[in-house]
Length: 418
Image (cartoon, rainbow, N blue to C red; front, side, top):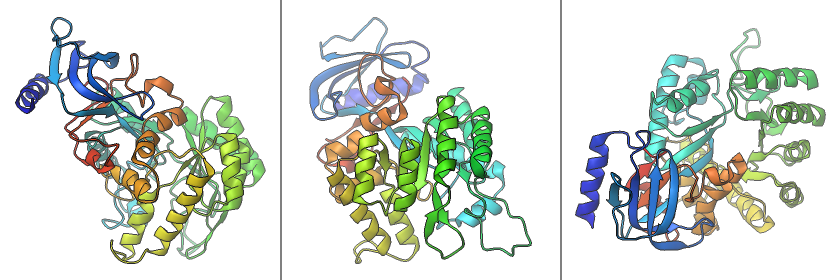
């Protein structure tokens, strides 16, 4: 089987793009994850034409439609392309350059080129869709990367862009400089119900698929986070975005800010480290999803000198406690890693930590497939291997429902039939 698979894969790769030429592609004989994400359909054929899956059926032993390229994946495990709902293509790990230096010192051209390489690393790691939650001072470069991917100019995942993110005056970085100087800010500064509506309109006009707001942040270096927007301002952001059919994500760690954001009608809460049980219940009632960004907490602990095997760093202790409360609450938990704080292509670390902190492997994979697709409003377009869905497929050598770490080494990744 292995030699047949490698020969077929070599044929596909040497032929270049297979999806857009409309040549059917048949993956035959694999263990295919069923639409619920809970069990394997054994010995299945996945037929792809163009960028869509045409059928998932029991293997027939035939070679598929005339002219189809056939790849034998017998004994391998076939899952939907994975989704990370919290990424930053325009950032790179903070042990390479601090956030301040990236925002203030690195030219946007260089940062955009880094974003192109980050996009390639992401899709090759099996994450075929990203919600990119802010360019952090790089303007609308995420829209350019998204559009270049869609035009086939560069390789990368499907990108849902938020552009600049919305921040309140004095409530975002870079900060800590002599107040005589007007420093660039890593988001779009807007205040008051009218000001934030203008910002939402500007970002949507520039190509934003989502809006992101910082509902809390530290006011100056060393301070703890505190709520930065009033209920009226958050209401205005969500109302304006909703008028355009655009959902809102809220960066929020403090309980007060999370409650305000949920009451305003945001779709997701990012981080949520100090959320209370009462607010988790409110999130569950309002169908607001949590993106826990566990991998970012671990990365920041490492940058602070912590090493795996040592007693938990306070950041990790807080993340573990929050995640345990979230699991007990029944709130929707979607995969959102904050990749960019750590290396692009290492998105699987979020799933590994979810499992380490108490989630089953099955639920962890669902968080990055069907759950994340529902959060995006994509339904059966993404996150499932069913007729009519995008042909975003990851082939693995072992069962990820037993060990999610096998995702780290995909045998093959297909995005939109390519």
